[in-house]
Length: 155
Image (cartoon, rainbow, N blue to C red; front, side, top):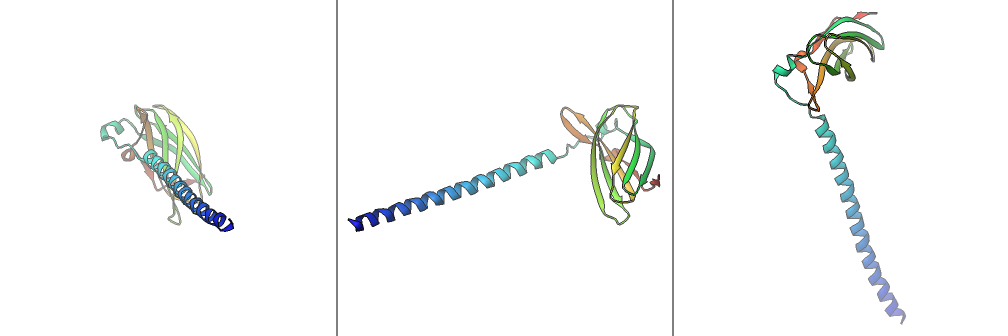
């Protein structure tokens, strides 16, 4: 009778090991699938919309006022064209040649000027400002219409 019980116990442990193995495989598959899904969603959201140069010809900015302090950059920026700007991308190059990319969600209607302050890590030696606008729920980045300068005064 005892030997029969021991045989059943061994058979049960084999089933338990198979169930545990399947649970581990399913858990790993769910984790990998979740990671791949989130990664692909981020990748898709980061894809920049490419547009013809014609659409970006109606976007331009000028910077009538620009100065910096060691940890801040002060910008007066004007929308000079026909399309409302909904975002600005900033590329900063510091004195030690390190770079920083920042983005400001801001609405600048044509002809309007806005004052901005960007937090920086140190003194900036080069600045690019790239206008972005929305068209049919897509972000359109006008890299060719960027404002660029290597002369930034100290406030």
